Length: 392
Image 1 (cartoon, one colour):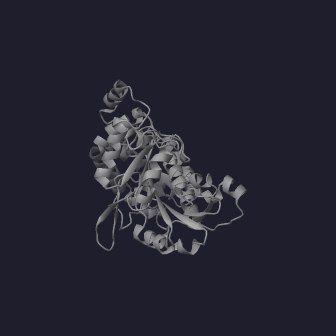
Image 2 (cartoon, helix red, strand yellow):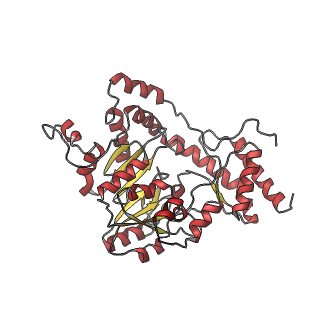
């Protein structure tokens, strides 16, 4: 195949059409500071499409997770169970409140939290279970919610990668939108996600007991939102909080993306399926492709390979780079991070988390990635493994 002249980046933000027009509209309203017209449009979109009880846009998914930790009154007496194979924000949000993080291993065949290993980690100090829907694929939410109900725990869904994806209830066959199952959920609209705002996130509140306080925390600890609705005659400082609102410019950009969600998702699924078809033959070399659990749909967030060793992955990254293709690894197990090692005496043996830390490789994935480029990437990967196994 002819060599691709320009490098193929790992990610490329997609402009869906009305972003600039809506930003101009937001500017023309002279209401730029957040919680304006486009913020409300975004909230309504998610609440109506997915049945979320209440949504609040935030400046990032990290902010949404930090809001969740405040809402749950996390304090130094609490323990929070979560996977080790996740982004640092998942843990940081709760560490900032003083909580002890208790790490759980991934499944052997996919990076999601192994629900069968959660219950033995629960103590009288456990307050919350945080699940991460890695690559958008659902965790086994029925089991996790049953455990939470049994021990009177809260569940937070880190749905950063899981927009427009669903859990399929094994008992009923009905689909439930990810982010709408736990007590709280956090989404990301970072430029690497399916739907983007550059930076941006959203807190979803599914438990009514948190509805009023969430707005107060969102508005820097004030009841200003209630004031604007005419529910109080003045507003003031009534709780802790921070400046979690994004600007109307961010919301305007996001709403333009949401209007094109179906188009974006359809194309991403085409790309995902192409990768799967073209890379199926890698299984003969021991390479693993993404595992889609039976209880999950696929929102085509990322496409990854699991190599046979860290050394193999490193060489594959270098080989692809020499062919103008940028592929990247993902998370490093948090239980092995310098911060955790320096601040905790707890020792863990989480082989599956470490397996993905050492061997998982994410391939270029974005809306405008062409079939020619996907074929080129796939052919280069196949050539690498053929040479590695002396089958050229």
